[in-house]
Length: 386
Image (cartoon, rainbow, N blue to C red; front, side, top):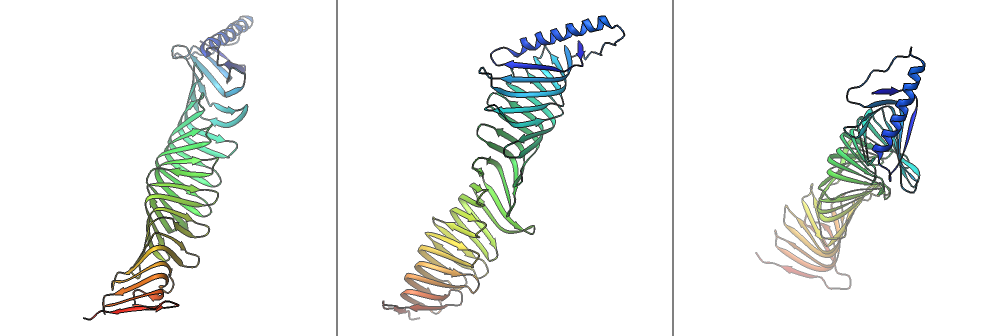
């Protein structure tokens, strides 16, 4: 085994086996070094590494397509060729992944291995993957670089971040052609402005579409001054990073702290800048302080003006006194716990027994203060004898 201190550059075309070219080039370099040693016998022969056939300093390995377009490049301070394992072991490698002839990712590590066919590179210790265009950095302790499909798999103490998102997980997969990063295992993502914390077991960062997507159960929390002001749960979710809107599907539960609400549905959009919660499908709202339950075919909560509007087969129940209101439309005002109901209004209370119908009603369910307004229609009141 011999060691070369001069710079060595290797260019690989995918149509020619890497092993043959490496062997030839390293053999030529070794012969040149032997000639130099014979001319100057005072120069010491470098120490040999038992497991390596040849060691070089300042090495550049490259791979291009059959058309001559660059695919990847790895520079290393020191490289040892292991013929029996058909790989090159590199020290402090600096890699570049190309797309359409342009560098898209830069990768650094403390050490690694480049395999003979050029289709796989393994890097370990202090891994850093930098997405140049999107300014995203992924860090970890071990990396597998599948160069042909352009997939980078990072494991062990994973973090991924840019100016807007910071994520951690057990594993990350960077898919360059799809402009996507997939996170797996105990995923926690923090999004800035507003501050949102996302927890799930699988999260896809759709970089081109500026979205965070998962088809796994998820918990989303909105924070203000490090305090949770709203949280949501669902079986599937999509968070729009540009518009800051979370869409949750299947078994959705959403909790608000001010006012204290619990919202249930199978589809909810949470517009955080406008402080809107919308469900186009069946929805249930529990007002926790006054113990009022509202149900409807669809609804929207506007927490900037403290109202919740419900539409279609609306049912409002005061749980303490079992007063019930049915209508086509209803607007609930959180600050004073009042409502306005319109369309086929029917109000019923238990104690004292009392039923009334009309086109419109206003009042409070918990205090049994309800006014039925007739308009052009006649109000029908039913007195139930005890």
